[in-house]
Image: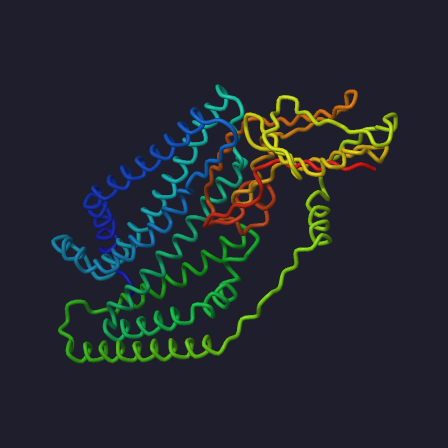
Length: 450
């Protein structure tokens, strides 16, 4: 029989004791989470109130931060498992009740951390929405969707449960075959590290059934089945683990030392092979040309999707000279490219030489607004850049305007971006981790005459 009736009572009593003994750690986590939340929120609110122009606020995805924090915390707890059990040794318990109560406690912590992540997100969202009611031009870049909030919570729980189960399985194996398992794990880690490219290529393929599953329902079913299987294996291994029996320590230490030697040899061998391959590689140079035709093609492509204003100048005599003036814009530099500035940023005007010695019947003014993305979010779409152009007598007037924009990217459940039902709805940014940006913060105007 796997468990006797008295063990059920032991499990519940041990869970209660674990909650009490971990109360200080839970309070520490709440304090750190509250500090992180208030510090981030204060910076965002202060930036919105005190800044002008185009501003971007990339708020930390606390669910991602806490997820990786859980991994570190549970790995540490895995190595402190025996010490924790020793502290609880005065309570009635068995090998099973100790292990299962530890599991229940860990999964309860996962639920609690998920709820804290959700509460932080909802509070942050509420404050920004309230601020936008009193201050104009405050935008939340990502949409609020209750289905995503609830579904993402369960996805977070599922992934966290799997991580906890794997850590507990590793702990059970290490406690059962301490030095043997340690040597094997060390060899595997070093092999994975030295072949990180291969691991990065094949690991996603191996786990594709889970991490690339597009359906939330199927994902949760697969995750539950896999979790049950890992937990069952852990329980069986732990059931037959002997903690306090005298063991041949010298023999196990010898196995551990052999594992270190083998790992070192593998690490050096792979490193030497990698160096040999890299020393024989030859880089191919790329030649670039900078001729007039290339520049013309670049300009054509750059303004390919630009809006344009066409102004009839057929009434002006050939050879006329058209002046250029800015409405609410100061011309701060002239030459091949005219630079104008309003209160926000420069605007570059090219092709102004076509206004001298006029040889056509139509002035074409092409306008390409600023385009700058941060993590896949286009900032200037919230600032509504706009240009007008008109001819008065022999003067071409240009007016470029842009509104202020304070764009807040408030994220949660970045781990749930794989699902079809959450795609293309503005719920998650381009990547779950990292930071990317690019584009041009300046408006560009091209003048030509046809």
